Length: 274
Ligand SMILES: Nc1nc2[nH]c(I)nc2c(=O)[nH]1
Image (cartoon, rainbow, N blue to C red; front, side, top):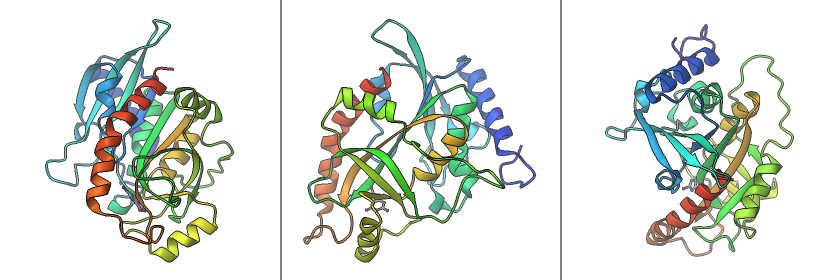
């Protein structure tokens, strides 16, 4: 079934994708799904045994990689929990951003596929710009709510979905068991691909945003529609435009990302095992 055909039900494509994953990986059902954003790539290796690696473009509905050579690989990982039980984690390899212009169905496809595999929780991670000078590059922030400034939705038709407690309080409490110092914030998604102007960052701040990015909110809405619990975690990669009087050096951003890598990978691995 073709996601781009309006007559196609996106959930049928998600079902086909989940069936393909089960068939190729031999894993009948997954419990939790991870979407790894900028800076979060190293987390998968720390989680557990990689049961299967599937080139994402072989899975129904996942687009051909837009960047030549950037082959998204979807992994099925078995993790051992403290109580000895095992769980299967689906690490979605390729994330489609709204700014790629491939349509909202491809943005939401990974989350819908995860739900179709049986997962009940999705962890959405991203890199973003911070609005608070005290949140330096490398800071991890738990999402407590979002502002969808894209003007888009992954939902079609009269699909009226309540988004109260979209970022599941129980999961935020679990993350705080791992690191009680984690701040919480509101994430505003701009369509992008351009970064915000200083005036747009000020506007987002006045509207209650603490972070600005170009992903996550549409995936979270689709996750709620699929009945998934959602944990959102942002890595502040840079200070948003205009927040810092001195332009951030790219070297500082790269250095902060490299330093944060092991820390956030360990955090994510510990949260997933709870
Ligand atoms: N919109 C937006 N997205 C981002 N992604 C990253 I990494 N940094 C930013 C940022 O400053 N603004």
